[in-house]
Length: 96
Image 1 (cartoon, rainbow, N blue to C red):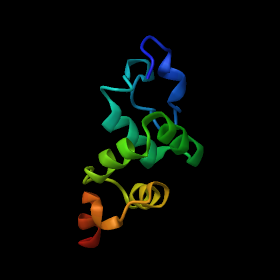
Image 2 (cartoon, rainbow, N blue to C red):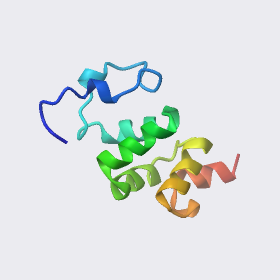
Image 3 (cartoon, rainbow, N blue to C red):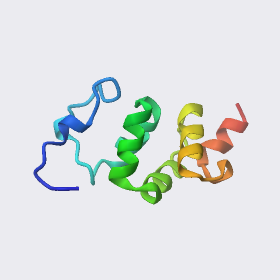
Image 4 (cartoon, one colour):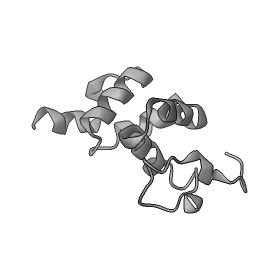
């Protein structure tokens, strides 16, 4: 995560329509970025951000996101190889 790099080009407008991508910081905003890309990004976007953050970092963030959607949950499960039961969002999904 190189400092000073123009990172605005990394963030697709359809996934980050409501924020100024130039104000996002890959390190500081990683929880928001990873969660949003799994929720709203295209498959290629998700793969790109897994490369940027790594499977372990992405998995840890998504496992602790209790508001992850059904789509985001199953995508994370499939791509990161993590058991559904390890996601906080899975518990709330079972009750809906």
